[in-house]
Length: 378
Ligand SMILES: *Cc1c(COP(=O)(O)O)cnc(C)c1O
Image (cartoon, rainbow, N blue to C red; front, side, top):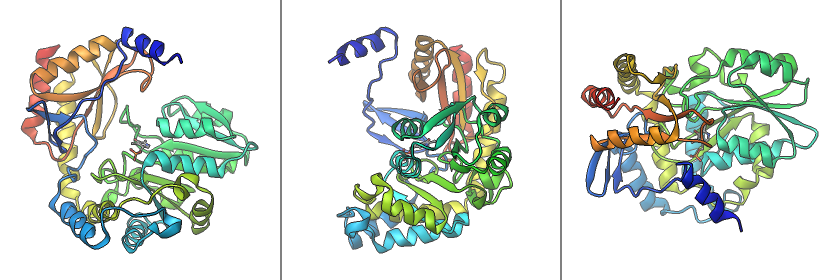
């Protein structure tokens, strides 16, 4: 088995990943080895992971339903709390039907592998999340990648009525958004299906936090498949896929990672439900987050690093070289600031970066501390 060789290679290139053990974490802080850090690496964009409303909902559901779903959804795992969450998601997002998954990774597997056959094509943005790329590689469809947000490149590669176009609302490692009005137009004129993975837009963008499509003035049914996750702004974990009733019924029957997997735990569904209700009324949290983003961008504008053009909670600073990125992350750690050092293959070679994420749980003073530390480290 060549695995130890690959591992040694990664280590030599400064690319080996290790697993930190976090003792306690929320949107604002984390604790490792008894030390406290400000957390600028998570995805708890609205600071909901410890919101009292979510904790209470999870606790109450655990007492009523138990901590586990006990079975897969089609057996006896689909309980009243799951149905209630599905109804709330439909109401919030304006979708005809939704279904729940225990992770976004498995949701993307189910959709792409169940919908596409070898006669189909799947067009993907080059920077789409690994779960989408992986599903595309494992499906029999012909996968076609197009340059990041390059609509001319996509248009040139499209074939009429041949399959599915998939892109993200907000790109996870870059923080920028896809041009959805143009994607919708291209899908219509070419008569292909369109799917959004809005893991990072949901809760943060749009009216009531309905996500990237709403932010860009589009109706939810301008895409055929609306996928979102609960592990980012909703502060929990899990995911949903929404669309027409027919789509959801089809996936109930053919989505293998849905059918053959234990349903998400009822306390988790209850926490997400409380989270959605909170998110719909969280304009104050979203406004605070936008204020922090603007302050951060203004504060690091003079640094000798490339700040990617992002208006979202994800604010990547591209360093380029891997070891320099690790060194900068370490220097920040010394000052009690935890950022994500993201290296290839998660991002393209030569674009290693600090993936800095802001949360409504941060204060202005927290963000100023980060800005000051970046200035003194560089
Ligand atoms: C996080 C993420 C996923 C995977 O979701 P999980 O629930 O963490 O498995 C899928 N797509 C995108 C764009 C993501 O950022």
